Length: 145
Picture (cartoon, rainbow, N blue to C red):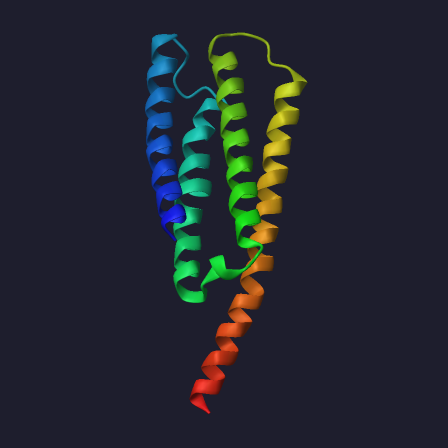
C-alpha cells in the first residue's frame, strides 16, 4: 500500500513539474504558443496515468487486498515501466519539436513499446483484481448467511 502511495505522489510531482517545464521550455525557445507538441502531453500522461490511476488502485488495494495477488507485483512494475518509457519518449520527441529538430521513427517505436507495457499492466491489474473481488464477494455472502 505504501508503494502505491509513494508512486502516486511521485507521479503527481513529476506531472506538475513537467507542465512547468513545458511552459518554460517553449517560452525560452520562442516556440509559438498553442502550437502542437508532444511535450504538452507529458503533463497529462503523468497526472492521469500515474497519479490518478495509482490512487484508484490504492483504493482497490484497500477494498480487496489487491497486493495479495501474485500478479500485483507484475502489474505494478510493468505499468510503471510503461509509463516511464512513454513519458520519457514524449519528452524527448517534444523537446526535438520545440528545438526544430527532426524526430525519428525510433522515438515513436519506443513510445509504442511504452504504451504496450501500459496496456499489459492494465490487463495484469484486471487479472489480479478479479479473483480478489470474487473472494471478497464470497466472504461477504458467507458473513450474511
